[in-house]
Image 1 (cartoon, rainbow, N blue to C red):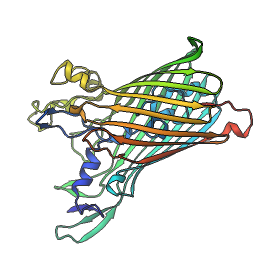
Image 2 (cartoon, helix red, strand yellow; image 1 turned 90 degrees about the horizontal axis):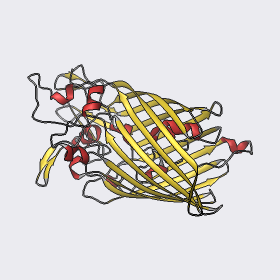
Image 3 (spheres, rainbow, N blue to C red; image 1 turned 45 degrees about the vertical axis):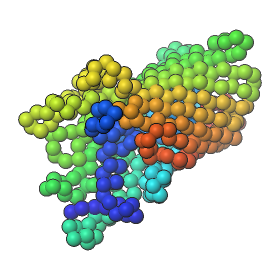
Image 4 (cartoon, rainbow, N blue to C red; image 1 turned 90 degrees about the vertical axis):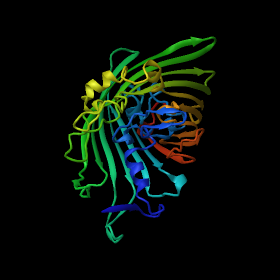
Length: 399
């Protein structure tokens, strides 16, 4: 049995690359003329795609910027400092539009509800559709059409421990159906199912002064997607999910009652073992893939074959600026950098935000700056936010 993607050159290779080695997270380890490429591969990389247009316009920086309805993905503990009582956000992200594909997309729904002055809860749904796949037999006759898809449902709880510090946790159910019911090389393919969680912390100091200007300094930490491995068969060879450590800072300067600017800087690192093609066991499974999720997290700081220099190459950096006028109109820009040996994603982002009473709109646009193609090349994505406090007429503005 074989399969092909409709209207995409009739080749199944594109689908395989899209499903298993999505550029949103990593590439296949190989050798190149410029040195050994040793990117970290994980399953369900859709969990690490920036889900909202605000962060998408800020180079994927979001760990420490002021909280909004999309905070759950970046740092659940920030939920405790949202000044609103109830909010909701919906985001639509086209995928691979530069290849003229129109049926692959990421949809994200996220919201929060304040319990009291100290506690806030949140929920989110992330859905990734990979379009329609036509399956054919060895003669090329069509035997069925399949729609691979993945989703994750998350719930979060955040609590203030002081006026400047909060912690948060999130739990998520992950479902990945890439080719269920098909048989490849005699192996039955089934949906991959697993669970994970986030542990996070957030610090904010809104009473700073820099010169004559009021300032707010934020810092955050998020350990995301900590969970068990996933498999699509009965094999003991399971894949890590994209556990990640995010560290972020953000500084906001208020020049007057109408103008303020935020500068943000994030560092991210996958908490997944680095591939080592030398350590292959007799069972045909690499040693690094046989580690437990917890052992893999701890070893990820010191297991790179190239030593400390390669460990430093595994850090991903995001730098961003956000300007607000009267808390109603925003202009954003950012830059994301990943080392050439670890995926080579490098891109600029820009975007706009508009806020008016009950709803707000955010837009973002990605401009690649390296030879590595990005699924979001030259793609416009958007987020719609709802502020239900505005119905009461006494809500306060937030980011």
